[in-house]
Amino acid sequence: MAVRVRMTITGRVQGVFFRDSCQQTARRLGVNGWVRNRADGSVEVAAEGDDGAVGALAAWCREGPPRADVVDMRITYEEPEGLDGFRVTR
Image: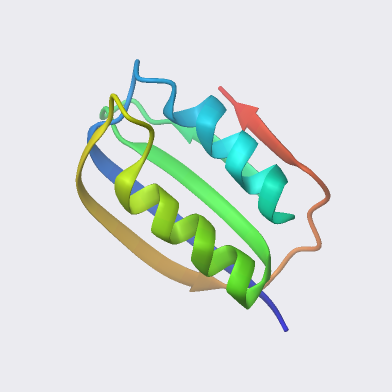
């Protein structure tokens, strides 16, 4: 079953290769969507695909790459849009 979530991750998440690492993890899991930095210092992720794969990406986002320090993560569920691929946006 396809699901879509939007995640907002706060803490030390910019300048620590969060976006690139997230993209690599999403592609490995077969998750579609995008990741971007926000002006407030957080990172936003839209992810859609198989429920288990999206859940695995969400679990990864709670930790982030080694240099990150995730303080909080908010998740909202949305209707899937049928995205193809996973990209880093600005």
